[in-house]
Image (cartoon, rainbow, N blue to C red; front, side):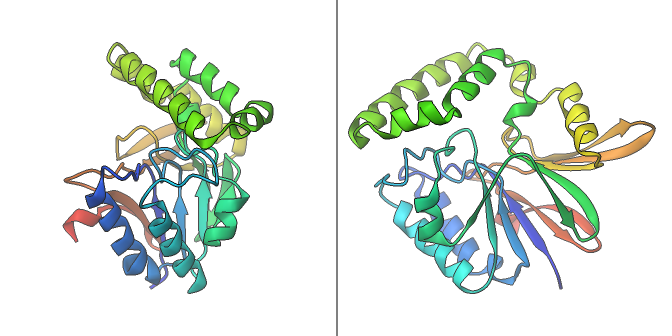
Length: 243
């Protein structure tokens, strides 16, 4: 049966070996049967550049390469943690980097794909930070620094982000209805799939009197790993942890 899979927010890191094992098993078995795999951002907890030598990352790159080598196309979107994935990553894995946002034909349904962070418009501080770090000049300056220095700067930024989250309301960190409607109207579609919020669900939105669907991919954690499975018959939110 034809199917396309969507995952996001795995946040793979050396201190999460259980998630690494689940990811490697997924890429070696479940994903082998799919028409295409879309990774909608934050595959890694952090990616400091294509010279990142974080332990366990080579295992992931090899697994991705094996999958693309078996003629399964993998499309990867930058997240807010791994926005520095570049051509080195592409060369090592055979994946294709997607510019965000992008509209694809999903078995006859035009579908908008996003990581999802740009939909969280109430978080003004984050949006300003995002604009800064996505600028080519900032990225060139950052990548020109030694890897050890980049690692220190990333740790400092992460600590600051975690402190901010303690005082930020759930509402601010979630998408805003206005941003969702604007994105769908801009691209003239009625189906959106995104990640980022760690709130896997299916939502209905009314646009110009017509029902639109917003599907949110889940993050991966100890007790759940929710992904979206799409077939010509429709989409399902399924949990890999439950078979």
